[in-house]
Length: 403
Ligand code: GCO
Ligand code: MG
Image (tube, rainbow, N blue to C red; front, side):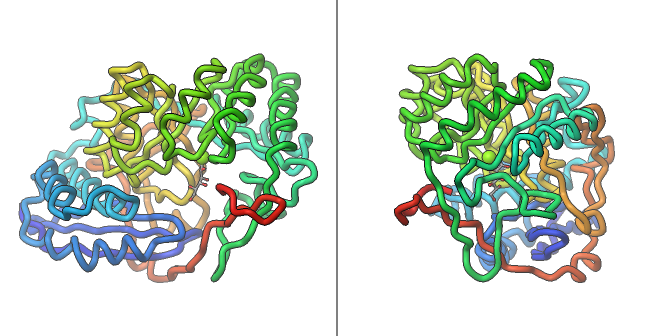
């Protein structure tokens, strides 16, 4: 089953996606998501210039060997660009293997370990009243786990709030990054009030999550966790900058609020200490940024040994191909926790046809062979790449802060 072609398509059906397409001599096609929001062309070049030529002639069935060759063979390991490129190849090869076996990928990974995958969505609002309205809309759609974000009074912009008229939260802007302003003190006062208002209005029947987006110091995050304890959070997400693993010791010493981190992680080495020292409750690494199905399963297997569950990143900047791939992993691992779902806005559905389905707040990857997503290259060509940057965040005195 030799690979005869591997090509990269960069398109923008609603937002920018980089898609790798791999074809074999037997006429099988596999796809993988290679999107790295705001740095798309770096991964496209890594694949086109350095990886695709190496794939030609390889046996598509040798997934582990291909992974090892791309990871160890580059000598320069890890990092978001490398690991997103490796992930795209890995997922495309699993897609091909599933098609060759005429099975959905989750069957190849051991079969269904549950009936469906619990999703969490994102409710937000400029005011608490708007947030409540949005929260109710998500409840009405059947979601069982909801992340809550609301604009911080007194701050011009807050992470996670759609622009007026915007359906989906999309922070990225054109040829220069937009600049946001941040002030920790009002945030720390406001966040517990926001969560309390949701519990008062809606009770305790829904799992509540909140994304801090890497903005606090360890002791500030500890204080937030403590203040949120009465509200029984499912988790607080990314409380501190993720690369500082020992910071989580400080947070952990002070609070029983569950901690989740890892959407920016690329490898098992980024979370080794967090997992083996039991400093977190959920690991949020994703298929598309952490080396694909092969490597993500290894991360989750390590996490399982230490009682840490999965909670993969699933923002809208991860394409339907990686969302589907995530669902196959989520279905089959023993220590699944929750899966983020931010959805994909039209015209993504013109370009990606999916076999996964969502009902009552749970997703199922479907039973189409492979990952169950097809990519229409002609439709993609109608939506050319639209370069965008994620914002930069500054404190009120102008100092650059984590966004
Ligand atoms: C989330 C995330 C995202 C990121 C985005 C960056 O959904 O949890 O924090 O919204 O900001 O993926 O590209
Ligand atoms: Mg997040």
